[in-house]
Amino acid sequence: TAGIRPVRDSDNVNAYQFLKWEHTPDTRNTFVLQYYLNLHDRDDVSTGKTFDPAPLGDPFQLPLDFSLNTERHNLEFTHHNSSLEHTRFIWGLSAQLDRVESPYFIDDQIELDRETNRAFFNIEHEIDERHIVQLGTLYESNDFDGDRFSPRFSYIFKPEPNHSFRYSASKAIRQPFV
Image (tube, rainbow, N blue to C red; front, side, top):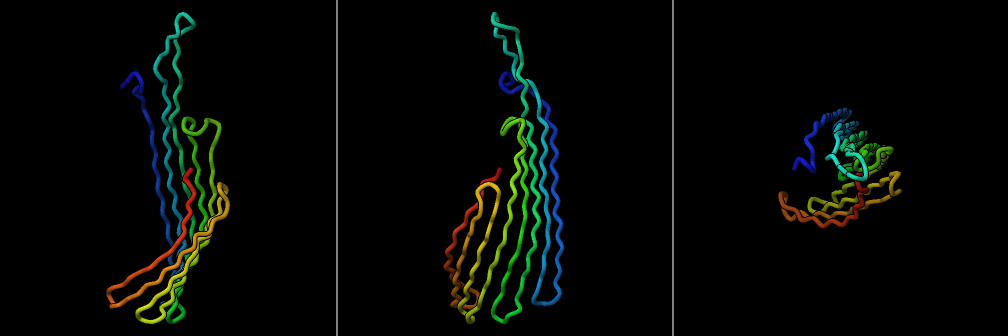
């Protein structure tokens, strides 16, 4: 319906970048450093339908700005270790920045930034060939809703080498996206 949604031009730019460095100094350790960027930039400015409030005034058009600019930067370090014979663990740190700017959807004077930092740890212990226990946690801190812990526990029973039953309990809390 052209009267409600006028024909307009929109310029869009999308960019994605993923960089990963992996180092395996021996058969029991692996270090991973990775960075990614997601960028979406949409310029979408137009004028709305002409309003004629006669006899109270002159006809006018409202400017409409549906522009939306978002970006996410994420940097993460992870260490995988299996130095102990029946135990493996992984731990890591990450930092993320989300930025959103949208005159129509948020406010024409505001650019929202949200920083999130994470630390995680998971350990897996093979009790014997049939029984495995896993424990893990994620600590997340952000400038929106503070600090959160998300713990996880799993028990795996393997009656046969290629078959397993898993019991897991976890609590996961995720912040809403800007």
